[in-house]
Image (cartoon, rainbow, N blue to C red; front, side, top):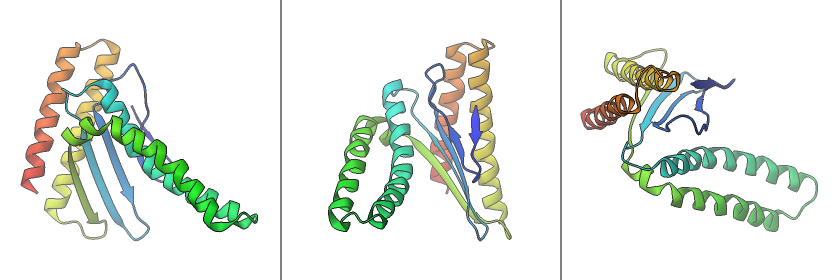
Length: 175
């Protein structure tokens, strides 16, 4: 199930009882720039690789922002600027490289589609791509919920997942 944070970014939470098929990201900037992105991992990649790839994707965004805020706070409290910056960089880069290294196979084989447009004036082609991204994410989420509830088998879910993976690859070639 997707969670929505207060800034409008949809985040998939890590859960071991659900397959990590990928993630959906929707960002809305202050001036009306909207970005939709779906990433679908290969069904042939291992669950561990997909989990590490998803963790690395999330980690870099969060760690850089949190590291910068912490660095500014420490410098503001009188800590030396350069050593603190080096320490923060080491604290961020080490885990980030580890997560990226462990999830590299899944990230390399993943297919993604991104659509960016101005909310005030949306072209029909951008609206179509954004609609297909949302539709594909909804199909995968519904199949995932049906799998967890026992309405479909793992094989049926894998067929939906494979179809979404192939559709994402074909849409990427269209753009």
